[in-house]
Image 1 (tube, one colour):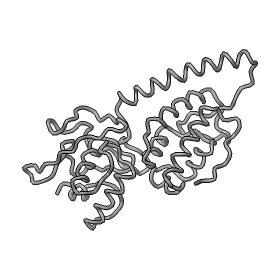
Image 2 (spheres, rainbow, N blue to C red):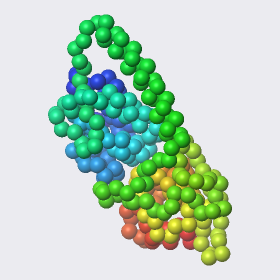
Image 3 (cartoon, rainbow, N blue to C red):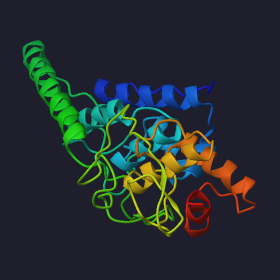
Image 4 (cartoon, rainbow, N blue to C red):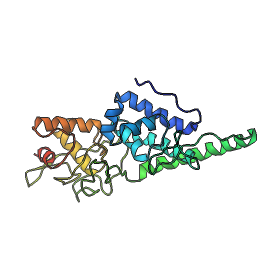
Length: 268
């Protein structure tokens, strides 16, 4: 268990709740900061700032932490939205340094008792509305975990929709916490295996990707006797470990990333 530094007293309670929950998820996973950095693409120094309340984590970092630790990202993202709302109008983090594109943290403002009471009531009502809206968006909107990034992580593998007529799900990929898509693997006329969610043979997917080709890979891993956990389209640490076992068994480079060579093994 990590020995965490005490969070700044000036930290907004809603921001504090996000940081504490991120710490719990990280501790439960058993990952150190260096391992977390390797799995998420964010530096060890960045995680040190995020988890000690000195800098506001961007939304992508919060989602990456949840996936790296095999946790449901929906709750963390909802807490992040509330924390961002709390930080609007602030003057930066405790050390005055924030991440690019991140909302600043703000400390408490001295106010009279009557103003504090009315402000607290307004904040509670606004937070409740915001959390409800975030949950609705998480269910209804496509998850953008597979978009192109500049930190060397995998870019989108292929189209977001599965091949026409090949799978039970249609349209853009939508991440749903706890969803386990059915896996029916068949051998097509070209002699290769397909699960009906993607026909890619070269698309690059890895930790943090979320798209139909991830569901395809998860189903094919199951078919080969290597459980990735849920076939939910989210490439987390369990899927990564299953890919590494497949690569080791096939005498491929063991990097936990599905590329052309690994797809070739999955579809045989």
